[in-house]
Image (tube, rainbow, N blue to C red; front, side, top):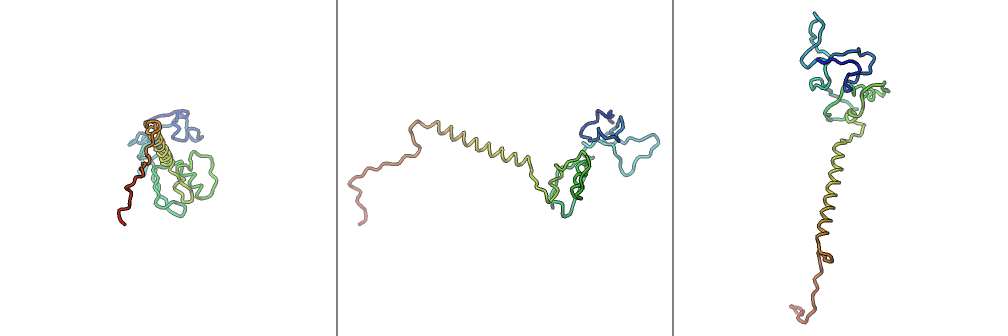
Length: 166
């Protein structure tokens, strides 16, 4: 298990500044439970685990007119559920550690951009245009001065240009 003094609680746990948190907290390692002497082990579950553990990640399934149909999100933090519920119920949220940034794409009425994909596409297109421009300038600089890649053929007019069929 890990023990933290209140000022040293990791930011990712989102409760260092909460009045309800005691001066020292214990976080159990995965597979272990912290109990008082003589306590029975919990049968339905327990809390006090590190939220960075994959086994502690929440599962959320949502359906209804407010949710985007068939949409899957890779991860959602538990602290983000409160602002999501407030949004769905049109209630002003109280101060909290959650954000709608990660949950926004779940809602049908919200515009949703996959920012890394958009940035990747823009950077990719700019790199391609840069490569084409550099290649064009390089090939242009290799031509001898005054030469033209395509020149018109000059045909001399002579007397034997009589039509073949008369």
